[in-house]
Amino acid sequence: MFTDQAMDLEGLLDLLSEGVLFLDEQGHPTANRRFRELMGIAEDEQGALMKTLAEHHFLEDAEEGRSGRKSLSIFGKALSVEYKTAMSESGSRFWTLAVREEEKESPPREIDVIADSLETLKDILDSEYQAYVLVDDQARIVKWHYERLLGIKEEDVLGKPVEEVLENTRLHVVVRTGKKEMFTTQRIRGNDMIGRRYPIFHAGRLIGAMGVVMFKNLQEYQDAFMKIKQLSSTIDSYKNEISSTYRAHYTFEDIITCDEAMKGWIATGQKAALSSSTVLIRGESGTGKEYFAHAIHSLSRRRDQPFIRINCAAIPQELLESELFGYEGGAFTGAKKGGKIGKLELANGGTVLLDEIGSMPYAMQSKLLRVLEEREIERIGGKERIGIDIRVIASTNENLADLVKKGLFRKDLYYRLNVVDIALPPLRDRREDIPLLCKDILERQVQGVGPLFKTITPRAIADLEQYDWPGNVRELRNVLERAANVTIDGIIDVSDLPETISAGNQSRKQLENRLLSDIVAQAEITAIRDAVQAAGGNRSLAAEHLGIHRTALYKKLKSYGIDCRKI
Image (cartoon, rainbow, N blue to C red; front, side):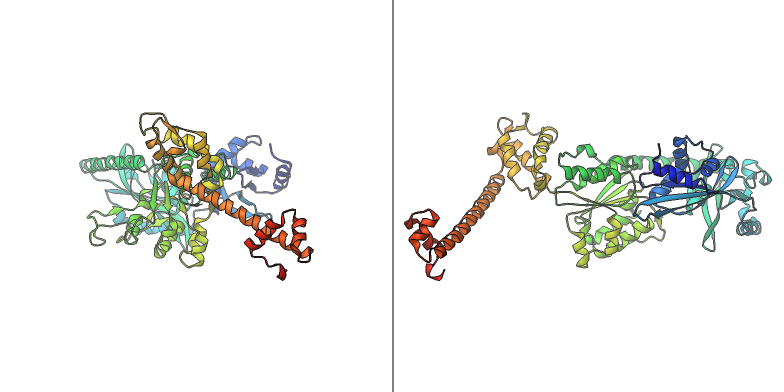
């Protein structure tokens, strides 16, 4: 059901002659009657509406906040679609999509010029070993040179969508993304061809794309095919190895808490998992930042792709660049002959956790910023820019805002990372979680220590709740594992806890007692001064006012160094 506000909005939208759809921050669509007519969707088919948006990648465009134009063909109608992200006066973000029917017109003049130019290059392109096709900005065929390979004449396919004619083509994808695809395999009539696809730009605007496939005589092709098959098998084995080695180990169910603030951050992390925005996780050492990063990846659409953790503080500065970006063979002294793939490239399609991001060298920060903005990397010693699709999560136990003020961290990178901010509280601020954490740690993590089942007494838990835990949950886990090793009967008691726990609690109690004595002393001094002043300096009378013996007053005057003559 739509709200009244949404129904009013629909009524206004129905007055428009073009199809219009609004998508609010929660992903709820509101479409006018003309939009549903053009897209072939009945008014009561809300599910069909969302399915149409997903099929044409509009939900992905909305999620990423993209703006642009597309052309669609729905039930034989050529539609022009324009979409963009906007902000309301209240600050809420919404996404709009406008659809209108295109007038029938001839293909753009620029693509015709290119098609004519191909005739001039026919001697080069007209090889018995390759076939090519040229499409316009709507992926419709403008030039066709597949007759020798497929037996289909050019006049029979001109103007048709290329994906309806050419098997397993991706030219329509290249038209949509504007990115070239080099030396990929394309299966045509049961045979794998080597394909290249190029976007074509004119005056800064994409006007079409060209695809070329190469093939040889049968025997040479079969030899090449076997090599490709072997390489594909090798690549698949590497992919399986990467997926099993670099994977997330924790989910949000593994994060134990009854603390309301912690539950709030879990909810934030769960929402963040639904997008590909960068996340910055802040918190002291041992608060569970890596657990959160694993959990976000496990819940995301990238869950089946690699999850790779890089500790920016643990890798020497001179090695960090090659670790992140990789290198080509011979790029520097000691480089492997075949080069090395960097962790960012290895994580393609998945998630990268940049742990202790505050320790990243300043010069490296600018290179990371370029990766986040351009989604491309360049290996050390390489000349080709490699496109990557990664989700970046950064974590730190430092105050990055302070580092920015000190000139130690780039402000633009800080803002680029701090899209979704998660600040995990220390264990001392959620002491009510300690009993739950003790139970979970003993049941799941330290039961392998010794033959006895490990449990803990209420007295020991009370001591643990009093401790301040500078090392947070990591320190608690360490303490319990140590206690599990030294307990005799499988029951952890106060005597099994390390001295640091009892010593820390004792010093804290001493501090509290000292503070209490200071408060009492100050109150006595004030009361004595007031009584002496009211008695005009007469100490006996002042003692009566205070309700204490004169001798007791003399002792306190001496103890506090109070001179009655100066009051």
